[in-house]
Length: 299
Image (cartoon, rainbow, N blue to C red; front, side):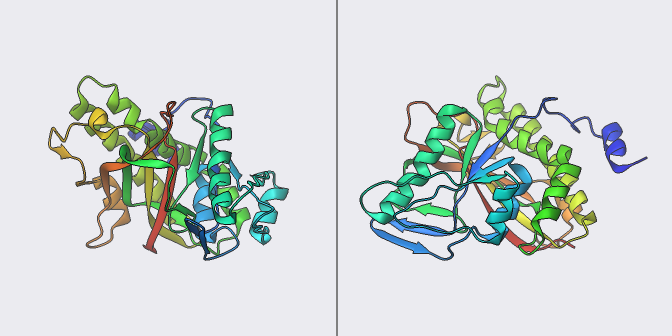
């Protein structure tokens, strides 16, 4: 019996997502930090590690371009453009160059979200886009972070291999994405929030364990990584300060994932805490931003 068939018989959560998996897109950026009129770019291209993370979980990538401060596509980006996976729409905004880049990045997301609600998110973090002035309010969002629970191909793995793996292991990848996307909404609407939280966390734990097991079987180098998922929802509406032993800001064990990762002193965990929320009257129920942080190589 193959691995997929074995898990189908033993894991009731295996394959638990809509038969027609929804299309998802991500707005990406090189590692740039913007504060006022100051723009610090650590690279003019998409971060290779961040790019491989994005390719695993999103169908389409959008990297806004600007005639004011132009970042040209490198070999990876050209390859993905030719494969119709990456597009580079023009978002030139008059005025200060740094602010124009920041506003163009946000406007691209808002336009895509308006056209296809719940479909698009932004990559944000130290390896992508950081806007110090911001477009969100502190304390009006919820952050769900998985620590040392996700396998990500190393930065020098050929993109063609990542895309081939994405097709081959579509079920495992989509299942984790589905559980992350619906995590907050399902708990928010549940009558028994502690029970819902426990059940949803167990689903994410098993999805991470399945993907980590697959990661150990890959024929190319893989990093054990964190993934941050941000929702624009008040933490007090999502989860009371303490609910059935769970408290905002604390970490809780992902035991199945930890067993597969098998790193001494580096258990896989899930953390829920207050975060930034969108400054918008119409807030998407789906996550609006993601970030990834890699750790040591997964053996």
